[in-house]
View (cartoon, rainbow, N blue to C red):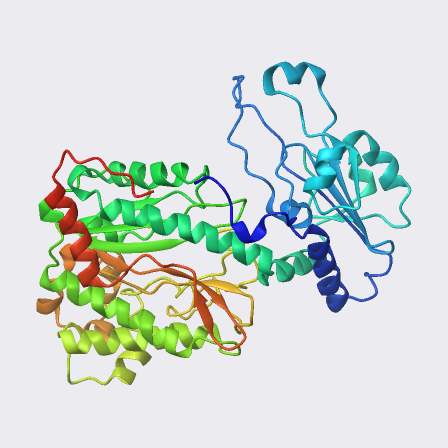
Length: 473
């Protein structure tokens, strides 16, 4: 089960095409700079913990990986636009290290694996850079390329723009990697839902998810899993994952995504602790589900992400009016203009997704004074081959709502007596990974979000009993 997508068998990660993509956006941004331009990026290397002979967990530089498809520590890549030539530099062979780590990838093996015109060793870098007509652009001078610092141009805004824009549009190879990451993640979420009788702590949920990810060959997570229950579900990035899951908490939220070959998934699901939805929990769950479904109705190329986000707020306001949390005598537009929903749905509708969980080129504006928009991570029009998350949420956090409840201009819309019935829910978030296509979208995430089906999965686990051991895959 540790194999990658079958559709990619025999194919190489399209590193050279990615370099050409960067060149295209670089030329588009500043055509004068793009004459005889070169790009050079150093990947990450193994680093020791301070005062220790153990290495830190390795995570490849995403810009480097985009231009190389190479996950070997200590590697480098050079693209020369005038020759349309991509060169990957492997780390110099350390004969002593072979005893501990085995034989490194040879140049011949690397040539078969990587989409590069030439494979060299790091010893060749200095001479090759000196021979270029112009200094190549790099992201930054760091410990991995400081020996060549005088030969590089760092932190150029146009180069970063080109890298980020190129990464925003996924090719079919990248899309297949992300579909595969989502498939692994689906199985992991199903495993968590299916094992609630033995998951008496948030840590158990964390362990169940990672166990099933590892069984499928995904050794890395896209981010630290968020595993919460009860009122902790109102904390957006709860990563303590240390609470007890007791019947009185009633609700569980898990936001977690496995990574595959440096590409992320990011999925959130919620469910009742014992399979029985309480009245308030189900009401809020169905409202968030409606928010997501209404967004899907408008999701297509050409739509502004802000409009989708604000549409979700209007759906929440309408739902709150029906539940009585917002007073019936006020219109949706009145409540919307007062921004009374901002702290019930404090984060953005979603974000770009790719090699990073919060991927490049979303162009967020965190200094925006509008409380409905300041945390929105995408401030642009959707285009084909972007991958985004659709993740509306609704939260009942005393910390978040304190200011709203003490502000007469906002609190007048809220029926506090009704609101008090919902504090225990904590929060609900439903999140899918979505590819924007030419005429609409494709949802990568397949694990159910139907509340009836979720209830049946959890109840079936209880019927098997606490001592049942299961592997979903």
